[in-house]
Every structure is written in C-alpha cells, then in structure tokens.
Length: 146
Image (cartoon, rainbow, N blue to C red):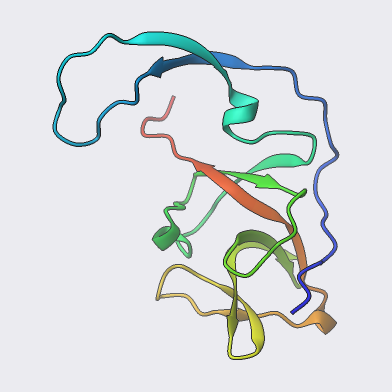
C-alpha cells in the first residue's frame, strides 16, 4: 500500500521555546522508593510534545480510540512531517469528514481501524479521496478542568 498520501493541515508557524520545570528523577508509578534528592531542570514543551513547524494540535471527540488511550476531549499532537505507515494513529479525511484512527490492513486492503469494538473499520478507497492529514505523535489528557 502506498501511504504517501497528500498531507494537509494548518499553516506552519514559528514556535518559540516554551519552558516549564521538569523534576528529576522520574516519579515512581509503583511502590514508593527510598527518598532521593530531587532536582529541577528546564524542558521545552515544544520538544516534549514534538511541536515544530509541521505539527498541530486537535481535540479528539468520541470514543472510537479509547483502546489506544485517546478519550473524548483529549488534545492530540499531530505531525505532518512523518510518512504514515501501517500501525500509526493518523488523522484522516474520509468523504470530507476528519477522523482519528489507526492505519491498518485487513487482508490486502488498507483500513482506518478503531480501537473500540463498538466501532467498525473504515475501508480506505483512493477513489473516494481519503487523505492522511498527519500522524498522531502524542496525546494530552487533562485530569481536571481549569
């Protein structure tokens, strides 16, 4: 399958460094470890979230990708610089409707695959003009509304 679909999306912008504190070492997500000295350094959110001139953010809506950890209201980080490949989560335009799905194959046919058994795969038909806008490189989820 040729996945070199035309990549579209918002116009590129110039990104200035946006730095926030990054605490080291990583926080344990298991049983607490022994006390250690913690130190602070700076990290650039553009680098952390892989923002660059070919990247943009888009809010997800719906539950078709919950198995991939994408929930309704999450912010997707999308980059147009990557050539989409089988297994990537992509933003696609199907019949002039955007969708986020995993790029996959069923047999020898390309599909946009949901990550929720309540949704059906979407066949990719080049004659219908399916376009890949970009590859999802990350997802941001708020635990608290601000």
